[in-house]
Length: 329
Image 1 (spheres, rainbow, N blue to C red):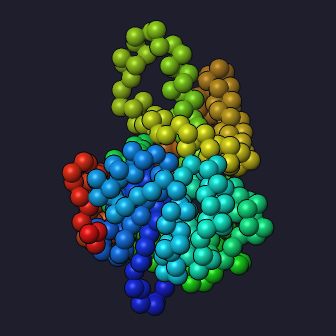
Image 2: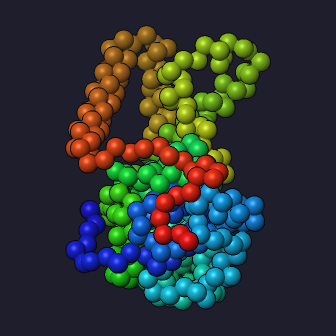
Image 3: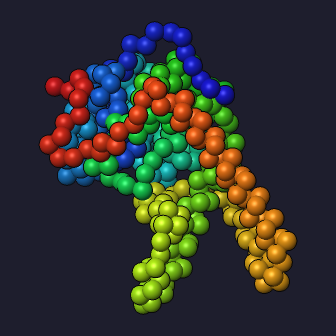
């Protein structure tokens, strides 16, 4: 379901980004570049990252502890949690101890079930101020310098509101993502985790496993010497942040294992077809897969045609001494 709102939006007063990497930094720069956020405050574990984020213009100021600025926050402010999935619970604890319940809190974790459970463990129940979310956009790049103000343009963001999610908080988060060019959709927590396990988590698991398998034969110079475009394209995502994907696989264990079991079962049937030289079966699998992939390509092409007249995204990752335009002092 697509989420929308007809009320006039006044923008965000303060945006607090907890975790100033690709996901958090891109939201910060995207909102600043579009002039819809008065101030962006960063929270990072290391002072060096805080200083770098300020120097790059990604945030206006930065701290290593959320408690240092918690008392400044009020209704109309947003805290965006952009840390590895298994680290979200610790951030919830900091918010519960220091932040007003009038402040909107949302996240960008790739697994929603574990975030819901973390909130329930900390608060007793998911608080009305918390809007669970997941931007379906990213890159194999990571870190503060990977921030891209156009990362979310023409991409989808899935929100998984619960029965007690505050309407005003949901509306604010919806407006926030729409402001950076995203299409905002809604689905249940369980459906989100099952769908993402199949379409994102499984492909990453396969890519990591393939590269790891070949890397064990690293002494053979021909393994990577003759790897062409197909290998490069298929395994690009194996360059993604290992810590992030470690957390995702653990947090979405049940759904990922189900997807892996289905894939392994199908792969074993393919192996049997090859072993038995079953041409009919092999052609059936390859033809069916090609048809499905071609259909997917056509769907994307039609969407691109609709978008082309409106906007052409530009890859402009942050670089030192290259300030992001916006309302920063």
